[in-house]
Length: 580
Image (cartoon, rainbow, N blue to C red; front, side):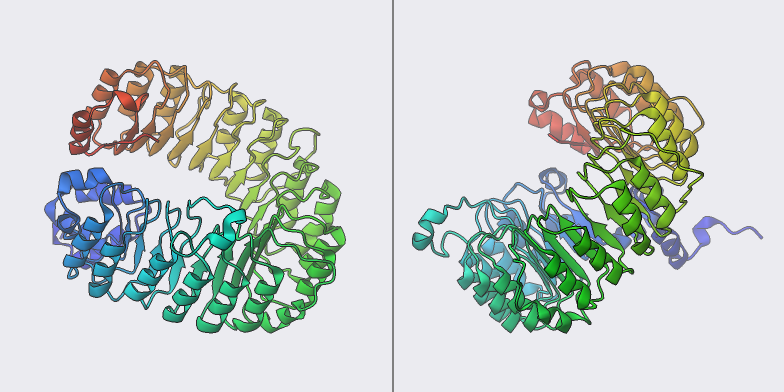
């Protein structure tokens, strides 16, 4: 006897919904029935809140009652009175008891009153992100530590406070973050496992000492652009933090004679990620890292100087199980040296060789041939296309993402060879490759029919993606500043029926007719960016939005033409008007 789908128990529907790849698919099911709406609401774990969200729901308390199992709330794009929202959350603790992560980044200042109230009611918060605040001070760190003493992860990176080292002796913690603030924070947050203090220019090695002594479970720290941090502070942390498995630093000078780095051997059971950028290092330092026998899986040496092929070769030889490698702006790398180094990269999954200006498409073929586990290749701003090279039947079916942006010599023939090497490609970025035409893109899509994300920004010779069979997996197309035309939009509409996101910013050739035709065929389209598209009027945009049931976010040609009432009208239709 046939079983009606309504007779299936909710546990079965939960299993089905949990296997959906995108939130948009879940939302489609939520509109089928009240039963599905209630079930999908229970399954939602993350919620992003913006001003317009509360315009419809009134208060965040009314909103979160729909989602009883939330684990994460993102308020980083909220521009209203954040203290009131957090106090409202605190009053709804019966609905936020599972909340583990809160993001309040990009605000003018820390909402201390709201955080204190929330901290009194909510004891389970483990992750707090408050980066990019216009003002962050020592008393704010004290408030965080007192409100959420069980925090395990904290991000206080890149406060926007202006700094002037000539006034350093007259600056105190009432204006910025200092060692005193970090010290007090570390005393209270003894469970801290990860912290990001990047961009706090006035903290010194004393902050690292305090974190090392008080946060014994510390596993990861990010210290980029902390101008006063030195090698001595980093050594202190490496010696003291027995659980440290991830460290990221920049603008550090490591001299040829590096006494103290023998302590790396003590990290031999823990340190998995070493990220050093914009720093002066030496072969001697790389030899010490190689000798330490760390369990490294991620290594990044971006924009570093003073080391040679000997140092990096020794290091890669010692760590043949690396999964991630970034060698941005390593000027001595050539196709021949990469051929030698690739023999150590059998386990590599991701490689970033951006701005290695001597590398050509030959290196791409070498990596595809010699790195069987490779999934992501980034070779922006190299010399791909400058010289010809045969791929000799090389094929790597594991490569899923290739970033080749800003390769000025990359042409259609070279791009076609890349496609033949990577037939299962899902993401391709050829932004600012201005020698490419629609013929090159068409040849890629003919081979790589599993493409999900295609980026053609500033490719001025591309007017369309080429005729061909349907591309059922293509969900994101970005063509900022390209020559995409109405004909090109018609082709996208006919081939990409499941398109979710389209960026047409600064596309002067598209008109309202082309946009309407595309939206009519792409019935799943959720986001479209029409900023600076002069041939698309507000009235035509109104017609497009109100004829679509799927659109959730629109960036109009000119935001100043939108009144608050029109924005509200769009929002009640379920579509957010954004400025970009």
